[in-house]
Image 1 (tube, helix red, strand yellow):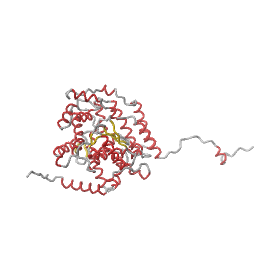
Image 2 (tube, rainbow, N blue to C red):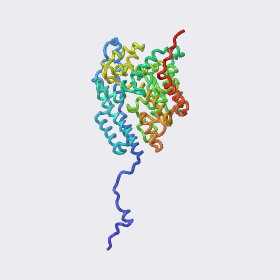
Image 3 (cartoon, rainbow, N blue to C red):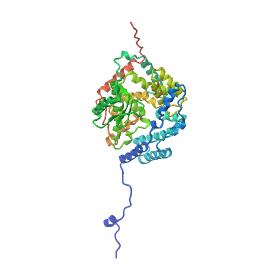
Length: 445
């Protein structure tokens, strides 16, 4: 009997195939890694992990604000993080390694993922160090410092904030026009803001609701805005909330959630904080929604961080806010923003609030540079999700492959950029023209 021909097609077809993993495209790999990062960061809640009980303020004010609030490192350890730090660090490290292994260390999109995973790991280290100087050290690494240099002129965030302080202090708002009265109850403000956001996002996409558990007058989530029950609002406040919380924060969250591949854009690690807050504040300016007292509140937070970094204690910063005319509760909450998580004696603050000034300057420079270099198509990518400015050219370059989707929700001045282009061009031109020219002094007759 002759032996079967092993080279025949029939014999080849009947040979068993060893199982192996199916082929995956670049976009599949990126999407899976991005989803792992989104899932890994989900329980990490920075502000919830460093919040102070309400009784801390009442005790501090009852004592006349003469003693430091009674918040120590042991008190922070009583606040559950919601995850086991070592396990979460290992999970993030695994993601970082898998990004390099699957996408390659030179892949630009992979580097964004790796940088984000590494930042979330540092956030965990920062939270473990609550109530110690190490917390502030990691805060500066993640969010920046008032000493950071921004813009083309080599000035620090603190220097710019002090210049803005002088400008805003010398402005008399009574000369600028009528001051809107805060006489709209929160329940009515909810209805008015809901109407505005339905017109922008569509019915049912974003909801505004009352909440009696928040400290600030308003707070935004991924698809909602909460207004504090009992607060009073003006029409101007509602306009600011529409633009700042709605058009910026909520819109970038929703645009990020729509990404089928670049899913990490739905969430913002610290590296995106300055871009996001600066964008929201800049939108207030572009829509003429902001006003001096609003700008002053944001700028004073930056100055408070600067003072605390230079050694001012909680009591020093609280007293400074009081000399600026804030009521005592607002003085406390403004000061608490700077010292939560850090130490109260000075030198070790939570530096996140520097992102307002830093972000406005960096976003303005990005807009101006995009127009000046004839690349206006980059600008809408600011809204594709929670982005860092350095990521935008990378995202735009891969858009044609479907790796990232353009934003659905985009403010009108960025849908038609003719107006913003001439505004940036004129402001740049006049800025160059007046540099070095003598200041005009206007004297009373």
